Every structure is written in C-alpha cells, then in structure tokens.
Length: 130
Image (cartoon, rainbow, N blue to C red; front, side, top):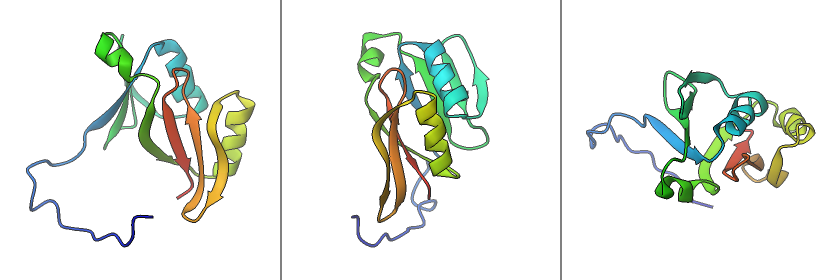
C-alpha cells in the first residue's frame, strides 16, 4: 500500500521530542468512560471533571468532553487511531457480546487482522493484531 518505508533519524532534525497525547472529543463522558475503560479495557491513568487520560509513560489517549461548538464538531468521526490488540479474535468477540458497534468487522488483510469499532459518540478506532 505505501511501498517500502525508509526510516530516518528524526531526532537530529527536530526540536520536537515526542508525541505527548492524542485527544478524542465526546458528548457523553460517562458513556465514553464505560466504553474506553470497561469495554476496550484501556488503562485509565487519570481522570478529571471533563477529561480522562488512558495509558501512561508514553503517548496517552485523552478523551475530553466537547464543551465548545468547535469541539462538538470533532466528535463522531474517524480518529485515525489504531490500537494493537493481543488475541484480537477473542477480544472482538467480547466486544460484540458487549454490544459494541463495529464499523468494519474483524477481517484478515495482507497486513494482519483488523476491525474498526465505534465509541458511543461515533468516534472510530481501528483494532489490529500486529
């Protein structure tokens, strides 16, 4: 799909040290918490009144309540975020049993198995096995 990848030594060319976080906006924070923490089983690192942060020690996933019109317009879209999953077959079956909506069912592709799931606000995430 992309051809051969050529890795560069980007540390020498950039003053940017790392990616800190990626934020997804939602309209219902409690429904989002059930989805991300209980159904996707992401490790909750911290939580406030209007935001949750998952994972720690590296790049984190922020889930924030959309408080402005601009943020509300960003809720319910494909996030471009891909999560690597151990035992993706079993995990996807658990998600189906839990009522999680799949935008694309689990399928085998040339690069591995992949499915796309939706949070309660319609934010889409790809799940892959490698």
